[in-house]
Length: 351
Image (cartoon, rainbow, N blue to C red):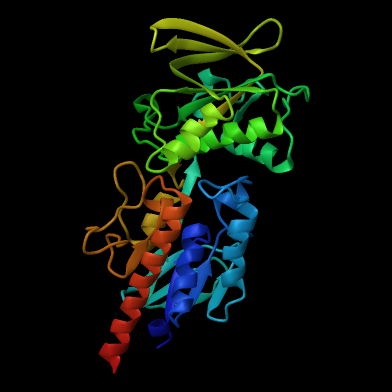
């Protein structure tokens, strides 16, 4: 049976590419189904600049991962395609694709990723109202082309504010989770802005700073001591515009307990990681559960690592919650290995 030799992998971001390379490296066939017309996931589609913590350009690092699977004879790639129906059970799944093709697979890996928080859901912070209020992904695109300019008039900004926890740790809008990567990405972005525009002052407004693990020294302290980023512990109430056209960041400095109104040329939203907007559809098609926030639910993780609520279907990366690229890659390897273990069990049973 073809299914005893094949793993279906849904999603071709860092986690999915890692899973596919693992499956192929273990001598089995991987079929990648990707809904977009390019491989690489959010780092490529959203135009990320330099990755944390390596500092390597996303297009180069993720490009190598794409090339590794694209040139492997054990990997089949279906772009601009979705899985619309799944029949069978662990060991003998049959997936129907949006182009009408069918894929037989013994196991499945879901690497379906996340959706960036839409800052329109925080209208009081100016996104969608003022041209010079951007998201971190938009600012990374500026870094990618080597220019930091105010969208409204093209001037080099004198002052840039990065607002943390936009779409994270916010019960008022139903986002009760920390998105894990925003503090470190923002500290890194502050340094990138300063490298391109040395005369620009960068401010980071935060509730708490969570540059976890070994990132504390490399990003938090380095951005302050070497790049003169100014960290301000504050609660931001709103972003408005002054009569002279500059943006005004209003709120409370929570260290000294006093109101603040700070003029800025640009404001950047450090947007969080939402569940994939397609997760309700994915859950229905694959017959799996979602946890209370809408991410894909995991099985008992200590003895069934990367498992979902359905036998034979595994999950990795930010599909289960906010995740770093490095950890997503590691989870992709884990999920790919678990999927191949299933195929080996099938071979033993049919021997």
